[in-house]
Length: 289
Image 1 (cartoon, rainbow, N blue to C red):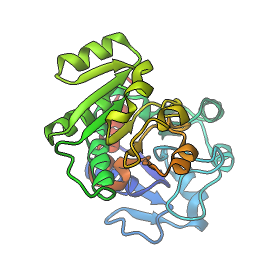
Image 2: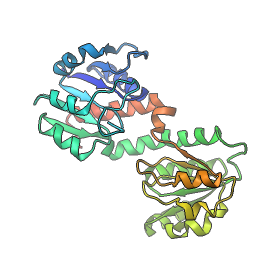
Image 3: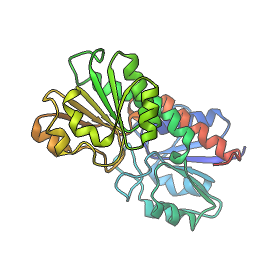
Image 4: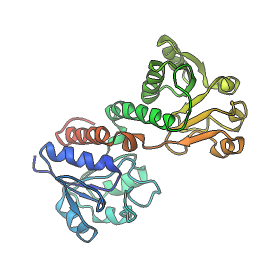
């Protein structure tokens, strides 16, 4: 394979991704985890970072690559500046990153061979749906004092992740209702045995539910919807920014609203890291994006 890979920043997912890439036969080093056990993967300290970037031909950034648009997401307090990293790229580099903005993707592509946003892969989305759903349940279990069984749960959106979440809640005995914009998605949810409505019914039905799980990055659970909820309702928002819940309105109403992003990295980093590694390996092996 003869690929020198440098994994840069991220959460514990990236440690396990690095370990998996090492097991798959790549030469791997990792940066940004000085205080973590990285197993057999060699750590790169800050003073050796530039040297490690120059020696690698594959750079793996985290998922998401950045949260503030300026620095690489990092478990430490000294995240690498994206501008600095971009300036270090050469034409022999291939960059993998999750949820990389078009601005940074274009800037990097001008300097290096290839830039892949591995989070755009449908297989990653599908495989990540399971640890995400597990994370939703763990978050919920840590914050409620009743059983999911016999509770009523609303799932907003019906994409890949929402489908797994609905399935898990149904398997645990919850009464699941799906809200979706697409009439086809509403029909599909009904075919799987769930109650299902268009998104325009969310406010009207809001008082029916104990649990709300939002998967859509658009303001759906707004102050009008929150005003109709039970005082005991719990909202778990797993959407990416700008999210889909008016958290200020929820706080003002005394309703628990939890922003639960990057759940695979928090609740199942081993599985999530291996998924990332295998997708990167397949791309390096020449499979189509």
